[in-house]
Image (cartoon, helix red, strand yellow):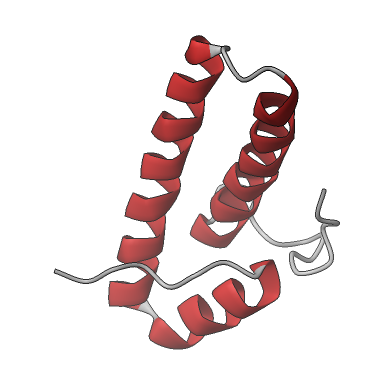
Length: 84
């Protein structure tokens, strides 16, 4: 799990960066769960839903503030979103 080092204590927990951070933690936790339980289809569905939510938030952040977007994906070690 990632530590909350990139989000400061006084930052709003409803911010886009914090939500992406929480989704990334959930994704990592579900991925490790699915490595053990390969036929847990409900968890697979939940993982796909969380991935979609994170992707939409990343797309929003990349349109609104590209500097914060680049910084966040660098700190979380995630790939850039595909553009259409």
